[in-house]
Length: 155
Picture 1 (cartoon, rainbow, N blue to C red):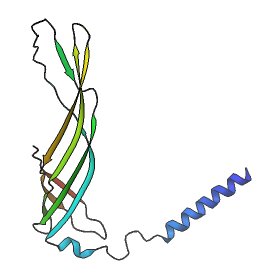
Picture 2 (picture 1 turned 180 degrees about the vertical axis):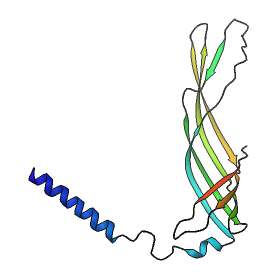
Picture 3 (picture 1 turned 90 degrees about the vertical axis):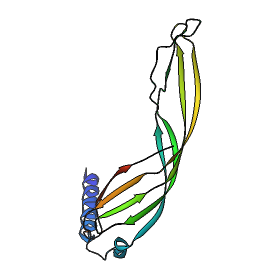
Picture 4 (picture 1 turned 45 degrees about the vertical axis):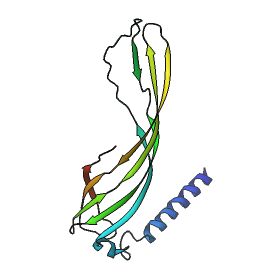
């Protein structure tokens, strides 16, 4: 019991010492000149989930079979793109982020009359060009919250 008490007191003392020594946001500003730049360029790499919504027409084949299709689960994909950010004024930026999204989906087809099941892999590649407006608040120390809204055409 005495060992547990000493361990807890040591952890509490260490936590209090590090919290007291930390300087929360009152140090030098990190890159204060970056908010005034006219252009920002960058890139992005990430993952996404692909889904497919299927609508059944009720079509029945000549031999009386009815097939239904479904994508049973989300499929992960990979995306890579660039970023062009143009400063419009102190609060608004225009962002364009062209990219390439690649992925694979597995489609399952089920014959409702015989119970036969078939699978088909469907690979897809999208070229996307999101266009966003970014609204940023006034910078406070080393933080500047923002929100974006826009459209994303994809081919």
